[in-house]
Image (cartoon, rainbow, N blue to C red; front, top):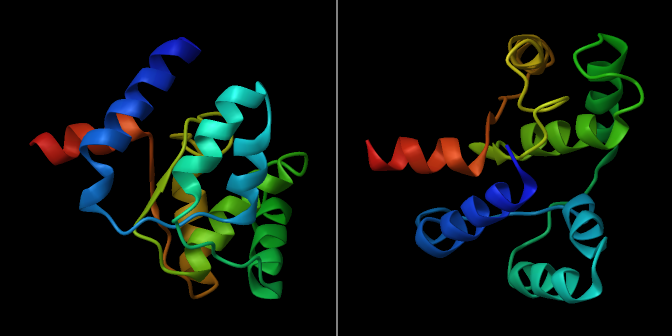
Length: 138
């Protein structure tokens, strides 16, 4: 899917659906939102300003390391593993992402779910904003 299509879907989800959920972010999300074009980054950061930030704890770092050690997430994708681990630590229901390589990956998700459960944590439903919108419309 083209980046512009993803952006439009995200904007639509944000405007029509986000109020139906209790939103959370992490410092990783803030760092990602800060990157790129300064005007676009400013808009992203503005959208995040009232959203509570979840801390990166020692436990989430440990779970991220276990996800990488078990090859559920590649070692070079440390931040991706940490996104998943933070969501698990805080029992987040949905982890929205456009990262279909390491996070919302049909081959990786079963192993991610299994490992989170094995280590005693719930695994967020990992999906794109588009998938969550479709689920909401059913």
